[in-house]
Length: 308
Image (cartoon, rainbow, N blue to C red; front, side):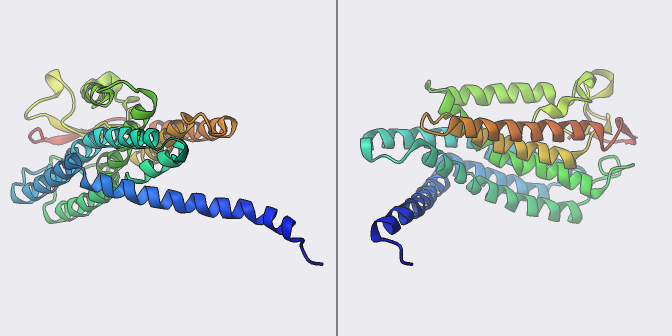
């Protein structure tokens, strides 16, 4: 039994539309990737990360191989927030100029999210170099790892604090551009992120159990102020599991993209809400696992070293 031409045309139309949408997304994603890679702010961040990585090999202070993740976090993640906000604004202006021919907001948001692969690739290059440095220039006994902490624990922290921010920073920039339309909002949010990070990095002992709620916080080092911190302070390993924390951070990244997509008035809000609820539940579960597993309490290195 043959399919009538009209019925065959009706059945094939959705497939052709899906193929066209996928092709449009690929084209647009590639364009955003190129635009991100050409951004002068990204180039400055990538160059600065590379320079500081090389400097770490040249001038080893006994702990730099375990603490170098602040460079990609700031130069690729924090600056990436501003890069992505600018790319999103440019994409929206182009869509407004195109009028009826413009690509839908959801497709443009997905393409912009795909551009985060650029800073992530740079951060992965840093991570490879950091692991090499970790083995070539192992930390002094007064640093990490010590006691119950293994090399894998340190590597997980370095990845979580160095590579993941290269994705989460741009995703926050995408969120800001989608939900906060006023000029300079990305810069203001970046400043707020820095301020909260200073508070949540472990200097206050009262935060040691739950500070992992914040997506950038120290897991080890001469943390603490007053009598327990500063030059000559013993290094501490704070409680929790960085392995579960990696899952928590990845869930936050996915959640950020979904919330950015939810801003599209043409999107299926009911389906998107369900996706957001599911991923949020995963984030909560992995956060609880982070706090309930791993080191049950802070561990203090009996050897005294220097602050990083």
